[in-house]
Image (cartoon, rainbow, N blue to C red):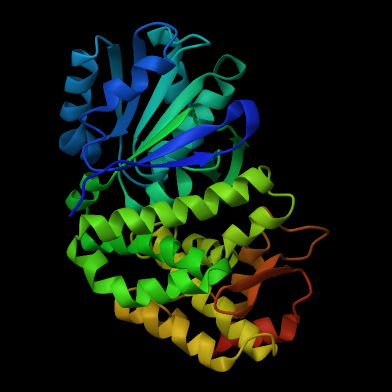
Length: 372
């Protein structure tokens, strides 16, 4: 298996940046960070679990590169994406003396990346940050594209800002420390890219699922690069989600509602909610006559074979009724004029955006708790 470093460019003109994908990037981070620095100091933000697993390698790399570093270790989990932790982090960064022109490094999964990016966006009206994502979900999704934010009582990611990183270092070796549940949660986002616009990639995933789950680095690098290429192209075309970038939310309108319904808890982590949401989106597409029923079945079967939930019945515990779930979906950021935005599909690899979904069909789907 090759450990060669691959590069994907997010082309945003003067704000373009690289995503580097490969093994050993955390241990060599200082080399990649030093050219970006105005002065040789950074602030590192991480969580308790990642600090134990990966912080020593990063700190050693920074020491070797002659980069002074301060570190804050935050609690693990979705509850860290809060106003309370945002305040704590922002105050710490100011006390540490981070200035415009300095860099804040997010070492961790999507929670740390989203929170750190938001703090960097508002600190002194904007300081630079670098993403070092350590989960598959963050490597293929949340670390790329500049969406940052926190959760509120009303829903997920409802306070935030667009703030692009200067660099993303996706170390595939970090995935080897992930529990399988966390790896699969990220895999749901990988599947998403095939379902949105690349049927051939979905075919490849069906063929290589076992290699990916078993830890084949070459296969994992290929999946991450392909996912990042898809996201980079979409972000370059529509940075602030006024059009085609909304396609990246396949499964998310359902998924975010399910996360809220389960209290943003370990009952249902983000990627699992997306997996159920994607299956529901294809079921709804088939019911409305947009998509062949066999494609909906194919999607659900692949998610189930991967070990992901693919039905409402797979969500542990009780869920709110259909009307309550629809109300939660109404808190989605993409609601316009009171209408929900859905990403549906005409086939595997052919997603589209619509705000014209029959409410009765949606309600029937959610009431049945089982796929058609």
